[in-house]
Amino acid sequence: MSTTTSTSSPARIKDEEAIWDVFRKFEAAFIKSDIDTMLVPMYERAIFAWGSVELIGKEALREAFRVNMDSVWKDTQVVHNFNGIEFLSPDTAVVWGYAVVTMPDRATQSSHIMNTMIKREDRWLIASEQLC
Image (cartoon, rainbow, N blue to C red; front, side, top):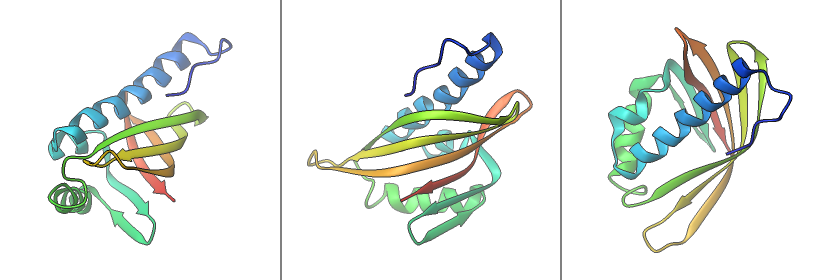
């Protein structure tokens, strides 16, 4: 995860930590194949673009997570390594870096990742994700 700069306000530091926490919880749920918990931080109409795959909405994500957990993601781990956060407004941020998936045989796959985060009712949600 990226570090906070010393020029950040206490409120901004709190938001950055809350965003990092979204991904820490997602990673823990991913390891357990806990799809319901993986979906907690998703915006209802989240848009995910993974290569040529485009998913829109929580139910599409649920189905993709289920299929992948039963196949290509079975017994894998994911770690998000973010390079930074850019706040576009107090309630919108872009987070970028890369995600590393570790397979059961310890082989790894790394992808660039960019997430758009939105703050609703004092909670940060993933509104979109793009992997390439």
